[in-house]
Amino acid sequence: MIDPVNNFKIPEEWIVRTGLAREELETKVASGMIVVLSDGSILKRGYTTGTTASAAAKAAVLSLKKTVHSVSVPTPVGLRAQLEVSEASQGRAVVKKIQNDHESDITRGLEFVGEAREAEGIRILGGRGIGIVRRDGLQVPKGQPAINPKPMEQIKAAVQEAIEELGLRGAEVTISIPDGEKTGKETLNSRIGVEGGISVLGSTGFVEPWNDHLGEMRGDLIRCTDRVVLTTGRIGMRYSHMLFPDYTVVMIGSRISEGLDYASGDIIICGLPGLVLKWGNPEMLEGSGYATVVEMLKKAPEHMRLKEAFEMAIEKGKGARIVVIDRDGSVLMDSKNES
Image 1 (cartoon, rainbow, N blue to C red):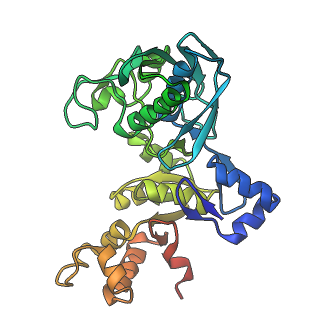
Image 2 (cartoon, rainbow, N blue to C red; image 1 turned 180 degrees about the horizontal axis):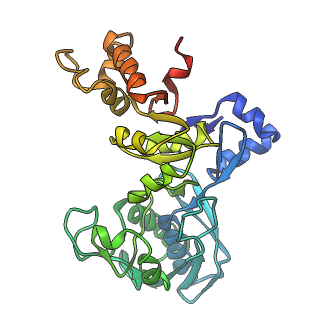
């Protein structure tokens, strides 16, 4: 059974632990709306701001000529998302961002408003509550509404579906978020150069049911738990939650040693080989003939330097369990299995 959002193959023992009938579980997994954890528990995903904006935009266009109660929109991972429409008439529609099990998602429940009119081609505008980019270097050019490229593609695809369904020549849609400016003040937007509202984001169309934006909170979070997974990035974050559901998972990037200084109790270091093994031995590639750890793993999986770096990571971990995973979540090395 494959999770279609992250392409993770769910181990059979995890499936059995859920206690659900296989057909029922397959249906839920196939929707993309749930995450199965290693202990059999299930967490609910949500839809991103990009997916919600897409639904509001499509519903607004459809409401120019028909009654709309719900809409189906495409997502970047190829799944369809079905969202209820709170209200829709004469080119204006409202869609609420659904609830999920991500306790820190402050955008849950926000209303997204689409306002549409027939026009030539497709034009998407950012209205009140969507932040404006005020600095260079972000995915969106300075001065433009903070709608990232991937969700912008998603919104346009959803509007295109509505245009084709109604036989229109095109549509201009303005998306606004009435409480966006207020909510934006509770995000990191001002620090990265986005002002006046929230950003419309989403690389998959789905919100994972955990937080991966801990910032300066991470030290306090590590100190306040006695069962912690220190992970190196978002892939590690995703699979650490699935592999170790009873632990607090904290993303620390390359600052593994710093994270260890904060930690006490039951500690796991989990991440991709490029960071974990090079933390163990920063010089493992010197003179090896390989440019990256991944290249070494692929071309010479039994290379002595891989084992040496892993053993050095175990030593540096001072009793922490070291788990190295690949990009699909498969465990490559686990110090718990070392003799």
